Image 1: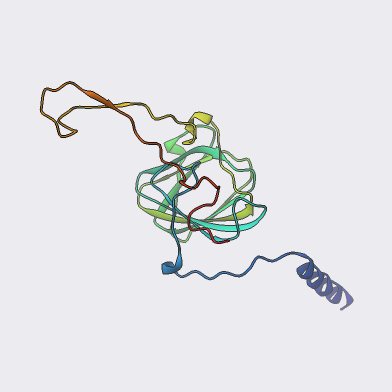
Image 2 (image 1 turned 120 degrees about the vertical axis):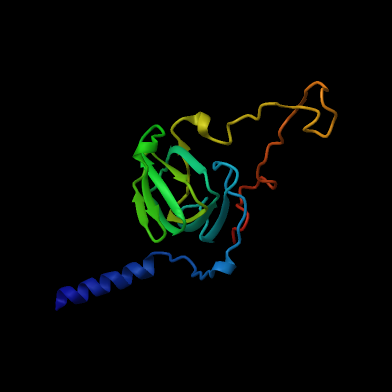
Length: 193
């Protein structure tokens, strides 16, 4: 009996000492989607549900991706906990992309990937995943050239016809505009302070 009382007292003291995040409830219509962090390829949407993934402490985020989206081999400093909300994610482990290593995780699936474990993902259908863990959240590509932040946009050649001109006119050179977070303050769109 004294053991139970001691354990109960210790857990109450622990609850008083550990700072708890403010509570949050989100219905599907209450999620505010924005651009993903620049470390992720364009095309995804990102929502912060709880905490600040850029700071130490617990966080919960959602990532919505279109069919065909990929996250190339990478690792995180902290464990990554993933729940598939809708759609399907295919996850593989290793330093290099290997389609044969992909394991299918359907809606309702949960997985936890230990810190510093190289892995990659592919989404064949539109998918929403929820990621939670201890911040700060980071994503480190095994091959730094895979990081969308480091990719340089190369000039693209278009025919005048594609640009609305006449056929047979010489090709002209245009540059893609680099897309990044407009405010540059590190705050993820949709994040609550």
